Amino acid sequence: MLEVNEMKPTCKSILILGSVSAVARAIAHPFAQEGYSLLLADIETEENERIAQDIRIRYRVWCDTLFFDASDIDSHPAFLDKVIEKLNGFPEGLVICFGYMPVQEQAQKDFKLIKKTIDINYTGAVSILERVISKFEERNHGFAVVISSVAGDRGRKSNYIYGSTKGALTRYVEGLQHRLSSTKVQVLLVKPGFMDTAMTYGLNLPPRLLASPEEAGNIIYKAWKKKKQVIYVKWFWRYIMLIIQHLPRFVFLRTQL
Ligand SMILES: NC(=O)c1ccc[n+]([C@@H]2O[C@H](COP(=O)([O-])OP(=O)(O)OC[C@H]3O[C@@H](n4cnc5c(N)ncnc54)[C@H](OP(=O)(O)O)[C@@H]3O)[C@@H](O)[C@H]2O)c1
Image (tube, rainbow, N blue to C red; front, side, top):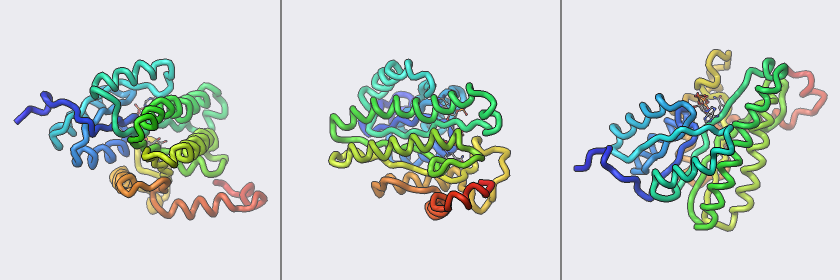
């Protein structure tokens, strides 16, 4: 039997960006279990390598890592060349899990934080998606899973800077889905509510509304399997956001949301 480090990637392969995120890890596991080769890319390299090693040992699949900075858009073409080199071709699927959420009050006083949020969450995601999706479209095959947020559904004072980047990402993905509707390329838009991850560490969030990364990963993987287009994680966020979106302005402006 081949040792895991002697294996070659198969054409059933997936590129996960922001792979150190606990949610990304939870999404990676079922794909590895299905026999997918995984290329994990993140700005954090040491922990990423540990995650890859764990996946190789657990599932005996090809799994490798790459450094990736979403905000450095000039590096993206060379990054994708490295992806092709590592996988001996283009991946079958792409998962976008990277994201950055500044402290709202700090960002209001420091435009650098606003720009960083836009560069990572929106510009970085679009730069990669446009390039990868065009390839998928050309071969009429492939899938992308994009993690946006309920924060993009209505601008609220508590996090409208982060929320506006996710709102733009949501609109962008909706447009992509429209563009790809007559092809076999699948794009799943994920809108999580609160998840118990590094991003929300230290925030006082209602436990009943919180999803664990494992729960979230499982829901997202199942939705991808069922070829869904848009999901909320957890399901009740669809209704919470429906109410928030439809609150009359004079009521909404009095809330502390
Ligand atoms: N947690 C929530 O309640 C929640 C709710 C709605 C949506 N989301 C979205 O869910 C996704 C996963 O987030 P999470 O909750 O798992 O938080 P997380 O642990 O902070 O994950 C985000 C990942 O993105 C990476 N990243 C940050 N800047 C990057 C850059 N410039 N280039 C490449 N990678 C970068 C982070 O690396 P470092 O840790 O090294 O910075 C981290 O691995 C994000 O898109 C987030 O916006 C989260």
